[in-house]
Image: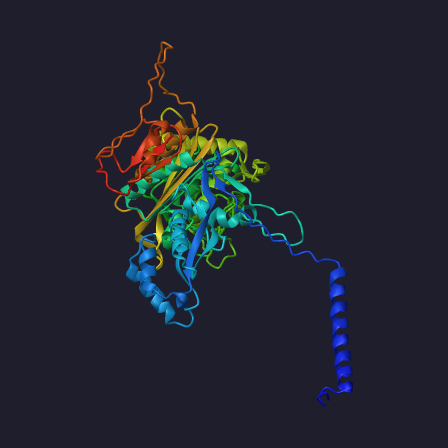
Amino acid sequence: MQVNGFFSKTRLIILGVISFSFLIVIVCRFGKLAFAPQTANAPQIPQIERGSIVDRNGKPLAVQTNFYHFGVTPKNIEDVKTFAQDIAPSLLASPQEIEELINNAKSNPKTQRFIYIRKKLDQVTYEELRQIVKSKKYNFARFDKIPGRVYPENELASQLIGYMGDDGTGLAGIEYSMQRYLSPSPKTNGEKIEQGKNIYLTIDANLQYKLEKIAKEALETTQGANLMLLAANAKNGEILSYVSLPSINLNEYSTASIEQTIDRPAMTQFEPGSVFKVFSIAAAYDQNAFRQDELFLCDRVFEKTLNSGEKVKITCLSQHGYLTARGALEMSCNDVTAQITDRMNTETFLAKLRGFGFGQRTGLELPGETAGSLKGTNDKYWSARSKMTISIGQEVGISAIQMLQAATYIANKGKGVQLTVLSKITDREGNIEYVHEPVYKQQVIKPETAAYILSCMQTGAEKGIGWRANLGDISIGVKTGTAQMADTKKGGYSDTDFLSDCLAFFPAEDPEIILYIVIQKAQGVQYASRIVAPVIKQSADAIIDHLGMSRGNAASLEHSGKISIQQAGQAKLGQQLPDYTGKSKRELLNLLDRKDITVNIHGNGWVIDQNPPPGTKITENMQIDLYLE
């Protein structure tokens, strides 16, 4: 039998050689791979958990959590209507809304491959939807886990704490300025992964709550546009309370208005008015420009004509007659303040003000701080009257934290202390990596100058126009100010918009606390002595009681020494909200088991306040906030 000519001997030999060569190549390559050193897979970079922000006592203000984005591939959904009906209840949406969203996405080439149905789902909603997707085998749906943030105290100190965006980066406040500590950048060079640090603020959350409550009532009463209220430890510069209104619930930051997000104490500048006289008189006294017993005549106007022919005219609200410098501060006299300032060398005067920190940033650990505005003699807007108008708080722009920083020089015998909102930084295990130590600044005024100014401010509280801030049992020094605000539309000063502020120290002879308040655009009465001095008194009382400072009229009583303790019963809830004042936290715990209402317990101890008030009718899904101390 003859073989087909195609399979000739020569062809078979060539085919065999090619096949054998190919086999040799495969064997060689396999051997090379088999005996080559193994290359390790690139290690997976662990997820960095963002650190928490807490108050000075460790109370959580911003904590890490997880959210979930829920998305689908629209083109793979066959029964859109059924899918929409299944998931709508969990999303608190209508099936029609979901159905329309998916159908629109299907018809768009850009979105038919993937869209998000809802972003930032909480854990409860995620679990509900995950069970539905799993049981119905909706393999076209997916969940993307993203790091998130929960702010347990809602709007408390909102501008100070700030906010974190969806990408895990801080966008404002401490969340922004402390980003490198809260969420360190991932290491790619084999170094140990560094987890986020915990930031302890200097504020006391319970004290912050009390002062925010006082501030909100003041803003509502005066119908002002905004309010700032700062309290600091005069000895170490730690800010104990940082209030800026209006504020925003940080858990709803994306819905906030611009007004609610502005960190006014750090970012906005304003003319402080007569409060600034404290520093003008201090600068003059430190340069021996007047004697304590020297009298100046206030005839309601200060006038002066310079050699150049320029005229200066400063008016006063009243004709005070003869006053000492103490009397000028006590009565807030423009005329006498201008006379005293006129005696000073201009450059020396400005140098003293810069020494107090005006015209420069304080260095507080917050973003966007303004440097304010303090003109020099070479400034194109400098005029013959600039020195005198600056001395009474006009033609100068400051921030609230600048005022607080300058006040530390008065409180500490002429030597300032750096302000801070950072108490300490710890790692995840609680090991301390940073703890605040006071940083003292240069001596700007003599100790006797600071003592004299404090004495004058105490007189202002006892018998001057700041008497509404007087505490009675603890000495306090105050200076109020009322300033016309700039008219941004017509230029010059507004006839209707005023700024009312007040600076306070207590105890006056050796200050422990500095307080500063600002209300802008109050309606009706606008004099600071009438509307902000009383708020200073309220705030000082709250601080004194909260810190347990000794008071002169503290109540004392005799006690037998026998204490009767009654067994605490569980709080009850009927058809109307009862008064929970005085209830302990233990007595409230059963309320947390209710499914028809939400009860939020803030703080520890006993109930001091509640919202809604007692007597409110109980409704389904009602939210009840109980504040303990």
